[in-house]
Image (tube, rainbow, N blue to C red):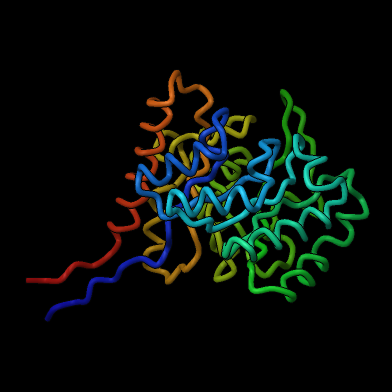
Length: 273
């Protein structure tokens, strides 16, 4: 009997953050040249990342779609697109809608954003009800210094403790928080809508290593996604700041893409002869 080949639905995208300190424009160029299915735009201090028309032109020129928009919720982006976190999310949603991206990635609030944190879960549901764009809330981690731990996010860095329609799993963050990534994926269940694929070794620093260079179950997660009907995106979000040249950075991103495609495909059944 011949069994059908099942092709995984997940597309593999490159986060524009993965080329830092090179530009957003460079990310589009590299993604197209290496054969990624699209990009996730990290909205941050690069003016191009904040300019929807510039992003559209890059997408059209390189024939590489924007699959997701990462809202500007990092410490370094506190003033990008407003100081009001809800305005940031509204602008991220508008950007995603105009660029035909399916997902907005958002972090839980910092604890000092008290009003925002108090309204966050309900507010994310309200915004999700107003659009077809997925708001995928990303797992974070406690901040550590020596033997001290600071809970920097609210309601919680472990987003599975709260009720969201969609989640983003980030495997560098599971390494930093020292939790079992696959158990967290189990808790997310069919609400897992987006993946940030990277690796880590459990350091207090958020490492974002190339998949396969740390201790996280990157291969196992990809194989599970391939057989579970996952219809979101897998985004390579790695740190290449130590690359000595653009060619070395590109080699890391090519390796990450090859790893991802290999393990998405390895769980697919092939026809029996």
